[in-house]
Image (cartoon, rainbow over all chains, first blue to last red; front, side, top):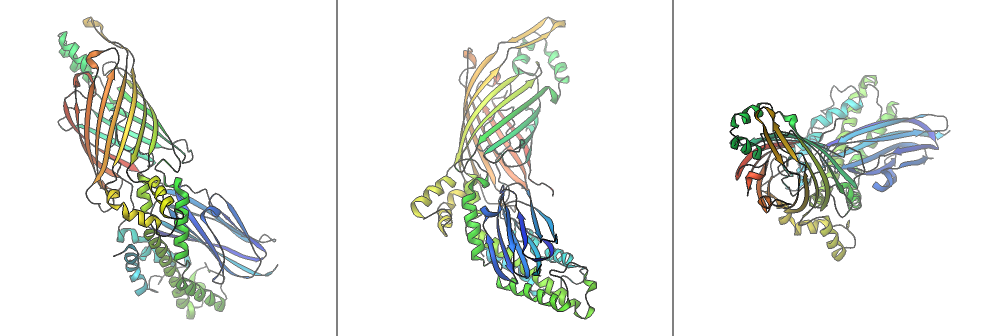
Length: 121
Length: 459
């Protein structure tokens, strides 16, 4: 049983940028996700909406965004999960980063992403 | 003390000694690492692991054909060593099992097994040599045998679904509902976490830093540096507290208790074994095996309960109510397996030309029926694994040979977890007509061994 946290700073982008979350298919883990802007909830995702999917979300409003993907492992053996988190605006600003965890049942992992969205591009 | 309170208790030092762990941290990531090392990431070691790889009993060497109540497809790799008879009268064997070697989805559980046995001379051949006054040849033949002379390769397959198979991901509908419910109940992220995050963001604005500033702390004005570091540390501490809260909710809503039910799911397994032996050790052997195994209380019985008593399986309290109802049975998790086996041995011909000795055993087929029963015994060890008892009965009918018909075999074994993934076993076998078995050549024999399950994959 362990708690694992990893962060990814996805940089500064202009409003209208797109947040992308790529999660592998759920084999041995389940996941939930939440996005907040200036510590206020924006959207949340259930396991089925994330696992095996590429989720995209437009970020039209300026602010400090925090993304949290929580993973609950249920596999008997230790498995690896790699999440791809990215933010990009029309000018190509932003970054894409891969956040990787290993875990087995009883472990909780959390990927935390930071995005700064400035005014209109 | 409930698990949740235990976790909060363990996190208490973080709160009490907060804003001290990140002194000397070079940047945000370093501070996070210090917080994790400080306490939160080590909850497992402090609080004891609640879940560990299940003890699935004594490892069964493929060449022995001794049935078990669990065919374990879950560890990535398993190594089983049978150290032979406690009186030195049994063969030693080593076996490697590689699960899901084809990388198939969980609906297709596969396992490849390879075993090498350091065997002795085939018992009927020994008797024939002695009868021909060639007892001395037995010793010289024994000297020429090594473990590569008795090798078994086996392939096992089990078709899995939400109704059968011990892979937790097959029960994703219940797990995802429980995770969602825990996530919503824990109000993730908590107000405490939001407050620390806001404090850090406000400071970054004041100091002209980027969001979640990941540059060196030394680049921050010295006057406000410690204040900022303290804010980052408080945020990390709150984040781990938030994750611990989610973990506590999962423990309380039955998320991990469901795994005990998954462990008891039925399995229908098909396997084929080919044993290649030197002529002096015995005939080659092909075996085709079909087995069905099931534990008393499992996810299927829970789903039936949920249909009758709840609106859906993920309903709050539905699973925890069921788990408390069957807790007594889950602690021992009794499981039975019925196995039918077809065995074919080709003709064996062994000659000692110098002595004009010829031993011939005709090809024969056999049909075996096995029944196995297993259960956990006693309390849990530090890794929450338990001692397991396995009992098995076998009946063998050999075609075209009245002497070999109606053979029986009874076995019992106890496996004891000594370390994470490592189990010591001791077992005994009783055989009727042991002179014909070749593998079990004593009426009663005892043996010992160990099993090591490789469950860790490095990042």
